[in-house]
Length: 392
Image (cartoon, rainbow, N blue to C red; front, side):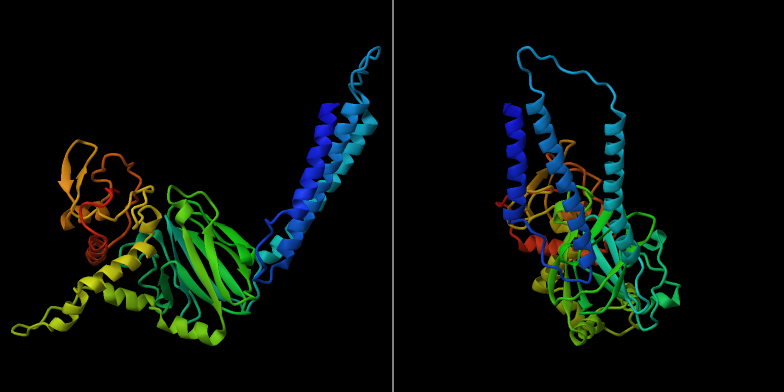
């Protein structure tokens, strides 16, 4: 009897919790109301069977409870009941699958006028690419990935020279314009997910997946990775800024193209004999404040902050605050003082040696000596020895 009462209480409490719960979906900010409708259908069907099955079990427990003088009735088969259960189950499954299949077919079939956005995921950062004036994205391949070409674009493909590259956690999109999203991963399984858009898709290494949506509300929305992709997964975040077309065009015009990025990465031409190089650019680039700020931006764009905090809070890789000038001990028993050379080794080749107390989880990412110098300046700016110990 107590079990029957408990089942009824569970059903009533579950229904009340659904209607009184503060955990509602985020406001819809795209054209995918069908997603919400499909989820509602799923919830109603599952909720209906949850209530009916549990109340039925409660009734059975009460109706056929043990009583003195009564023996349990043994009935190993009941063809009529089995047919009813099979039929109802089949109808329920079709009712669950049909709306989802219809919506998904539309979800991966973008309109012709949709603009193209490529999203590239890697541990634990986002990068983005738009086609340039040619209207076509250039080809890409893993063999082209290096420090100056993190997205692996083909430098010999003319269609890719004017591609707009955004290496960082924030991307802008125009309001009320369809967007076809192409997704690829450089390392492990990721998932591009923006909850208010009701849009998400797995990013599978070695293949390109896609979907489309139309942003219908201006604002700033969180990008999340919805697949467990390693120790820094929780901090693989970004933002989509939806704005009017004029503001988007202005933002896009400020971004660098692939050709510009490659030109910056090219070594400077040698100065003519007897000609002194202008000190202005070097002085500006070497400014401690400017270099540290570049390092801060790099720490965000390359995903360093997923494992290393800057406020003393330990994480997967302990905080950078107070790291510079401290003494670190390695798993082999040796130790070293944290200086520029130490940080260059740890950043450029993190597997070469492992700081005692931390695992060898830091991936080796393509990075230039200039970027290492910027990150070093940023770490130096966070304070010297005396703060919390930090390692990789």
